[in-house]
Length: 251
Image (cartoon, rainbow, N blue to C red; front, side, top):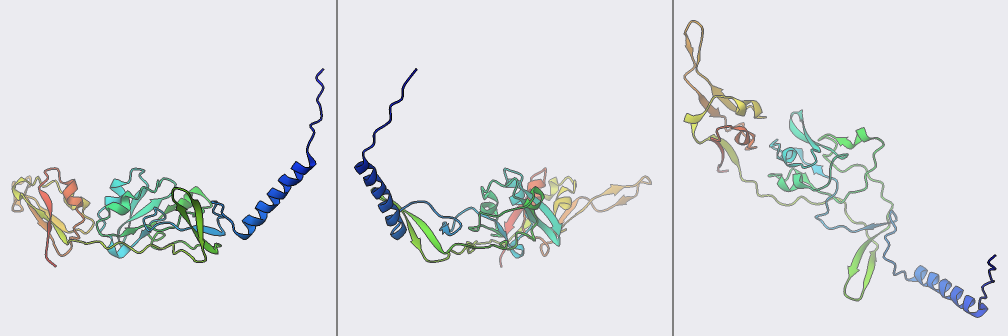
């Protein structure tokens, strides 16, 4: 049988420790130096390049499908209304923002919103209409905090201000481009470019012979209607003979 002896404590030392704890609590209440962000009463100030909720500008989109093709998580699906526009499934999105970086016209832009709540998995699939603006946000913070770090200090700097969650779009130099056939003699007449074009800007006339040996058409002629072409490049990527190209045009 092991007999446990009562641990003796020094009343003076105990009183001293209690006084130190009380003094630290008072000091933190008056002038806190903790590095914990008290979210949602405080919100950390994020940089302009923060990868948050993606905002879509329909007016800038040329339906090039580049965002959907580059997405490594297959989180972007093109939807057709008026034109082909991207929708995002946030149940799959990994916030790599490859879609934002690859967009040639700046139709996709980042924001500082990262705390969106969904009631069900089905609601996480947003169409282009849903990402055309930031969702409704209930903000509870009263100040913004920033990390301040040097060799000897690590602390939070608190400011009585509200950080803007919208990020101004980066200026994008859009070079007008139109599809063109660089080598029409090698056109197969497969019409893949016609089928993939979202603007119906490409026509292919083929030469056909009927059973009665009547010849229709004048041969394989590929025509790009430049007034309809947006320069999305889908036809260029789809052409099996690689005879289509994008050419810069003047304003």
